[in-house]
Length: 144
Image (cartoon, rainbow, N blue to C red; front, side):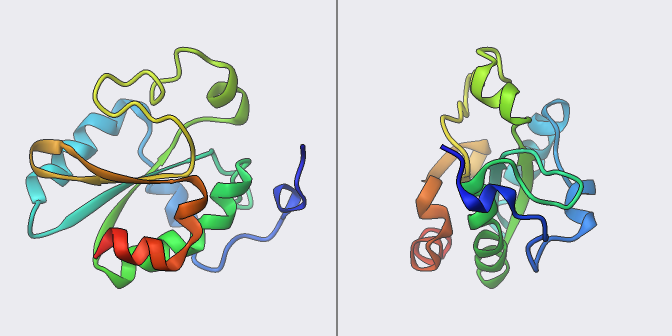
């Protein structure tokens, strides 16, 4: 059912309009991951998959909205670059069997939020999923 946090209208403290501009859409995804892989291991990078944001910078996905500030703070703390990767609006994520990220041959995403570390050669070097993404201790362990 609908949860109260889905109706939140104020953006998270770490959200800025630049995040919207920094978003990587499906057509830029492969290039962004390739650039991250090329920068490894000197710059560690994670892909942050989340539900699209509204005009106020809040995701339709309640867990994504709840996890956003914690993910950004942990990435900053551990010097991990984030690739901001919205997966689509609620309908395209939940109902579209051909969603680009759900059907991706190498990185099929099953849920949001998902935080995925990029390894050598662009390998999936591990994932943190859903509720775990808002747990500062789990984020810290995952990103260190």
